[in-house]
Length: 304
Image (cartoon, helix red, strand yellow):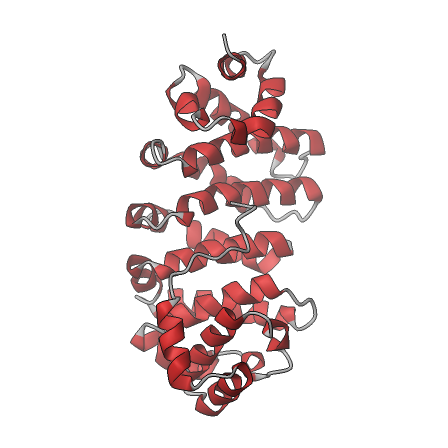
């Protein structure tokens, strides 16, 4: 019996599960067929879900220890493999497995065990949206993923905020997702209010990678005619301030996104300033933005 088969069998037994979770999570990249083996092995997915459910009582009141958090995060890492594999992704969705993770995204504690749990759970959802698939977006929109991501974008660590914003960005980049969020004023302003609050917080705690995803979300929202009109009134003033966005000086793609966003929001003079600083015209900015619109972000590759 090979090492992989033995470790997968060990997941089923409560006595050997903890060590198997640790070893498989550490070595998962060495086993390209790990996801289908996990999914199709008898009792394996049930064992992983049992690990997840077992810590629900520790969420409220918050009593999650570092050891318990590490253990369940090892189980989540294996589920992330299943979520990202082409052979098992659809099966993963059909079984509604992501719903088991949502209680972890609805926690309010900012302690390290909870933050690690929140970040790892977001990584599973991020693995789903990383590949452009409208079926994934349709599934997520049928659940409470948008409010849960917005909650994390408001109160999570920088890393959690970045992954949650990336998920919202990928949902927006799908036409179904954009139409869903812009279908009602309530949905649009819920997303816009959180994005605006994040921009304000970045004035005190700058983060280039987070700002990049925020700008991309705003730009995609501006593709919707009704949202574009609303952004003319509610786009944060800080995005018009070159001193605030000076951190993007080495990121030509994001600067093009920003110039196009400002133009879409009726800030022609600010857009021309950004275009001049980057060495291109506003028209070139539009062409460059449209050409690179769906280029997958690289900042979170190590996470998801």
